[in-house]
Amino acid sequence: MIRNNALDAALRASIHSKERSAEMLAAPFASASTRLVATLRAGGQVLSCGNGGSSGDAQHLASELVNRFESNRMALPAIALSTDSSVLTAIANDASYARVFARQVEALGKPGDCLVAFSTSGNSENVVEAIRSAQARGMWILAMTGKDGGQMAGLLGSADIELRVPDNSTARIQEVHLVLIHALCAEVDTAFAEDFPLTDQTTPSFSSKILRDWDTLQQACSYRRPLVFTNGVFDVLHRGHVQYLAEARSEGACLVLAVNSDASVRRLGKGADRPINPQDDRMAVLAALQSVDFVTVFDEDTPLPLIQKLQPDVLVKGGDWPVEHIVGASVVQARGGRVLSIPFRHQRSTSTLLEKIRNSRP
Ligand SMILES: O=C(CO)[C@@H](O)[C@H](O)[C@H](O)[C@H](O)COP(=O)(O)O
Ligand SMILES: [Zn+2]
Image 1 (cartoon, rainbow, N blue to C red):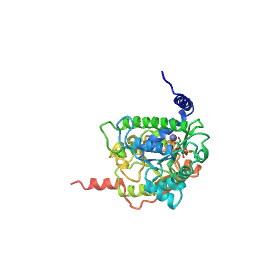
Image 2 (cartoon, rainbow, N blue to C red):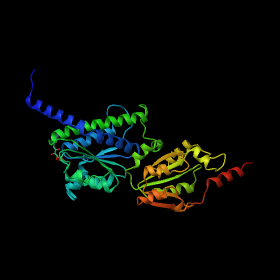
Image 3 (tube, rainbow, N blue to C red):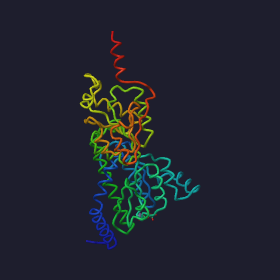
Image 4 (cartoon, rainbow, N blue to C red):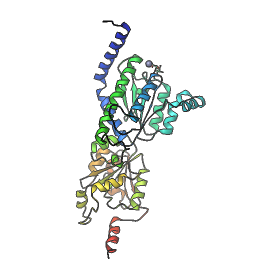
């Protein structure tokens, strides 16, 4: 058998690096894949960047999200920021090379999106600048680094995740980055294959905003700050509701709306025939509103346990609720959050509406 020493050495070093990564990156990898899936489920996008070999990695990741990895699933939104030579040369020429990714993040990034930032040293200035811009826009960072994590490691906040390859060789770090990209894509394939059967190649419906499971909801919205929370029955949706929800959404970066379950509505004693619309229908209608980022349901008499779990920054109720009576106010205020009673600009009520319909019967 013919062996080549250079190839043997490279392969051995790569295997060693991968084995060490398997031990050291298991926990942050699990967090990264969960959060990436939650971001995409919530309609967020992935922006990726890096230089040289890492620019290729950024493109590799984006291509597999947009197109597919190993199985068919819906197309997912991802853009590699190292691909448009006109944009890159214009920014580098008019501003500086350090701004080439940051400027694009400012143009394309939205709160809740993910920036996947590749740098084996953690010190590429343009990647560091991109992280700063992404954080300022309410995005979270998945930092793919190596060596000692460089400047990037020091920039990351509690919402961010670093996958730092335990190696000092740029080449070995890049080789592990590629494995990490493929492993992340495999997790994304699995998550979206469950949601969308192979035959369904459509974009996510409003139903992706409906998260009944509170753990999943917490993961999807925990880093979308300021987080706004409101709750109610929302039985027969009217103009007052729509206006109120739009105003609530404008108070932060993400609005979670919790509706009372049918059993919980019945306990409110609004009438034997209430709710008119069952909880699944109410949630589906609310999820179609642009102002609403996530809809969930609670079965308790009050949303207090959910408020304690989500720890929103802004708690909102309709104008008929004085702030001191709003359930969960003390929880939010204790963390320095705001509690708002938003006045109804359009005085409508479901009960009056139903009365009108009943009285109009021949
Ligand atoms: O691919 C390689 C080395 O394997 C090179 O092109 C390498 O990516 C470049 O030197 C990069 O500029 C290195 O940047 P970084 O990984 O430190 O951010
Ligand atoms: Zn290379």
